Every structure is written in structure tokens, then in C-alpha cells.
Image 1: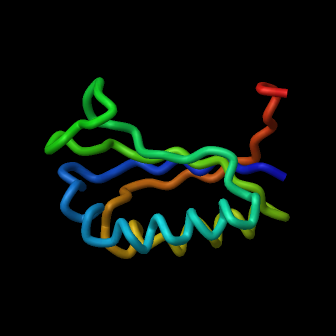
Image 2: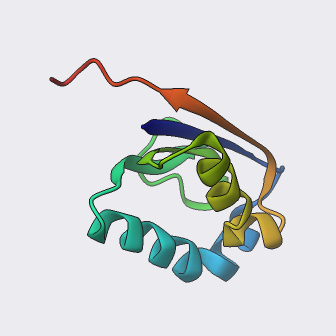
Image 3: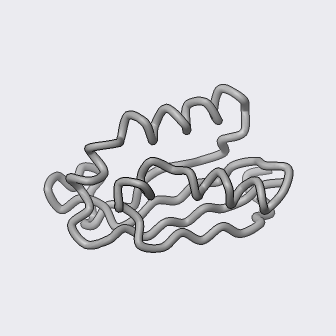
Length: 100
């Protein structure tokens, strides 16, 4: 089943993000290699693909897991959590309707 993982950043998270970004992306690449990453990316703090020092306000991922518990466990082990990037992470089942 698919799950959406929506994470909200703490204020001024950019430096924290950059400190563990490689580890965060490596986990996502692993999921992509397994065909389990549907979409993923950060939410810029300003209306720009390249927000510079404005940074980001959070992230959105849609991934495939066998259960909500597995999705939550995977989300809980994100390097951004250990680095203090996220103040809140929400994991919910997701049903993709489009594109079909």
C-alpha cells in the first residue's frame, strides 16, 4: 500500500538539513531503486524552485510499504529527525487515483 509522509521543519532548518542531506537522500535512493518511491521532495519556504537561504518548510513523500507500522518506522529513522530538522512528521495511508 502507498503512504504519504508529510514532515514539517523547525524554523531555520536549512543548516540542519544540509548537515545530513546525503544520508537522507541515500535512503530515498534506496527506496527508488526498489521501485517503492512514487514521489518525494521538499517544500520551499518561498515561491521558487531554488529558495536559497530561505530554505524549506517541510517535505512530502509517497512511498510503498506493507503496513502503516513499517511506514512509520521508516519515517521515524530519517536522518533529518536525528538532526532536528523536523518538528512534526505525519504518516497516513494514501490511495493514488491520478495519474492512472
